[in-house]
Length: 208
Image (tube, rainbow, N blue to C red; front, top):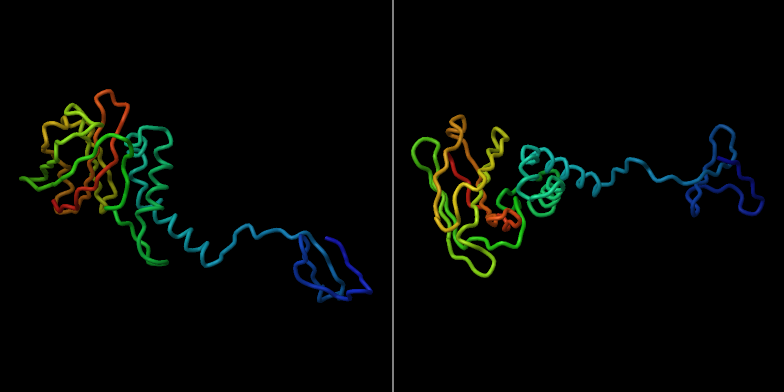
């Protein structure tokens, strides 16, 4: 910081280029210092951005280990969180919420399914069905993967390569402690060699 004395401009204050001028109340002297941007700015836009990011991290924290597998790479956690932030947050600050139907669990060039459904069976079992039609980028021998998310207990479960795409149906037993709770479900496919996935598809929210 330095003092400033000008017979031309007199006393000055405020920001001037890369410098900030101020007048000491105690001495009346003019001081100049280099402008430094606030380290923790709190504009309305920044506060809203931070709240949105905090919500995504909190609500998707239970999916972090799954993202490493479903996205098939070490950067899966960052990608899953980033896509959740970009696509799945609804509402306006401070009333943000996650729309899980918009959450991406997997990405890839493999064919998805045209029609998917889930129904509850006895106990905590569910039955899932999907369209077995494949086009140029898919195979009857593709593995079928399911992701289940219980937002009450904040637990995510991956059922990997449960059956082959060509079978078209699978019965899955979910944890007994999930009885009476609501569960989100997604499906995605994996090539037989495990090198390619499909985009994930949200199936539904079901109450056990």
